[in-house]
Image (cartoon, rainbow, N blue to C red; front, side, top):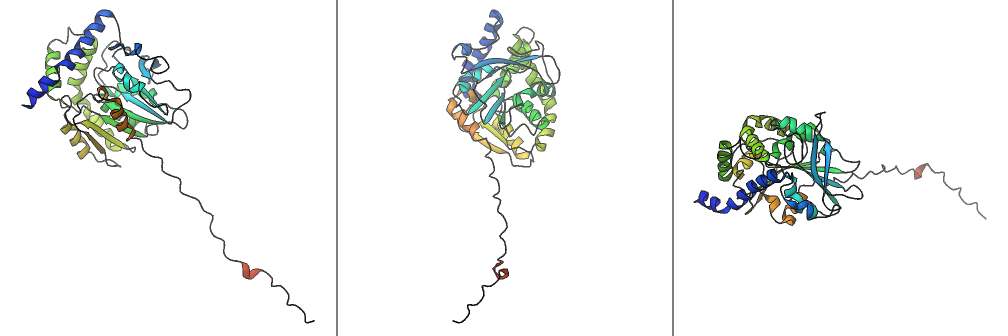
Length: 312
């Protein structure tokens, strides 16, 4: 019954995802939805930056331009396929006192290289420049789906640059019914499907052998860690996310946010709900301890006494 319900629920999204790849391959576009035409350049802007580690790649991302740095920058490492365009609506609805940058990971959309980059450690190294922030700005790092493991490695490598980590709809080696169908189908035609779908199939099928890197890094994190997951996720089962949060011992308990009725693509839902859940992951600044000077002892007894009045 559950598999039938999922099968009725997801085909439209699966077909549209595949068609987006085919259409882009046929037209030569790198953007998988024409959202860059929907918003002015001062609201959502396409940018590029040099990959970290001296890899020589140029990586593409969408960002929210601001006249001056906002107190918080939200860095989103997307899943597979890695398409920043699917976050454009959330970017456009972000309040002015927040910034967001959403990246096309290496090997996807407008990011180099054109070939497949299967090592999540190499991807974390390439994406490290996203964590750079001006003085006074703090970073909320969000790893979505396949990007959750990569974001964990980024946070472990740069703990002073990440104030809080969110694993959003994290994919941790276990596939739900729709993901299993996609992987089974994709594996049979991997030599014929467009690049981005091919890379997604290769990434997800090869991820279980790399998860030890994430599991080794996660307990070492000192910043707050939040797991946000929809309870109707048919790509990455919520049970796998719950098990990870339950069995991982961290300095601070992992906060688990179960989203009722939500599927794998929380960025496809109402943007105000997604942004509110991300906002709840921002740690409050601890107030400085008030400094008080020590009370001085009463030295009144040292003062000379006034001379007694002489009799008239």
